[in-house]
Length: 300
Figure 1 (cartoon, rainbow, N blue to C red):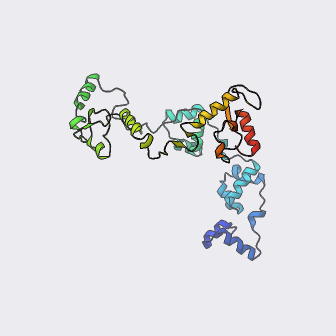
Figure 2: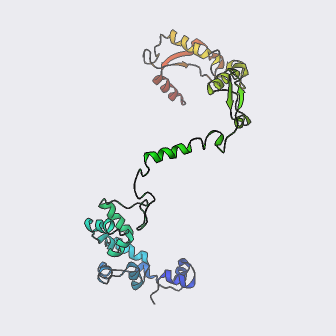
Figure 3: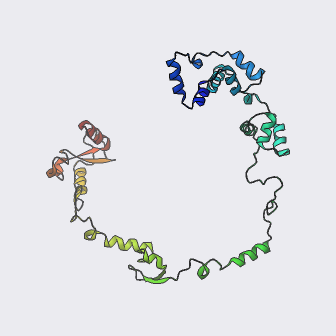
């Protein structure tokens, strides 16, 4: 009967792995592994006898993937690849006779995707979905600006006031509010007040008020005016300026004057907290020398 593993698995309603294990159990040679198909035979069946790949696989007694692999191995072109269509003929059928790609594919005995590839290759404008089917006409008869200026004016005037103001379905009576910053009275939607808004007449007033009430001692994270890194009242900035002034804004390693300078702690910041703001513990270095020094120490 020359059945393939796939067909046998379908007959017994099991997987191909089960069929293979049973073949090995009974010492039956698996045909697909040792099958040999000549290039001339494939060419004769495919182009001479006009067989499909499925028919060739069924005739030889193997699965379709084996035939496809042989086609790739022998570089045998498929029938769709050998189809030659003149661009004038394709244009006449597609736009002249108003044929679809499926109808043209049936004429040339190929798939619609091959026809689409040819349309792209010849740069033929494809019909879009916006075009109506044959026999159907759009309401404006494919004309732009079908309304006269007088008609457009009447249409515009008839819509004035219908969907805005008190005529709108979402209309809500606004209420008066007083700004917490500038004491100006303004009107606002009550829904904004219900959501916690309506305290300020503008975002500028809100920013100005919040910057004052949330600064200094009023801030939730107030530490008494002491910064963990920069000390009290910008001590680190003053220390840096004193170090730069003492070294005359000159790198103590390469001698570069000015530029991007760094005040380097000779005794490390985290190891010696008592010497953090000691001017004798500071050294002026340029950015490059500062990076090189910390690389040598094993950290950045």
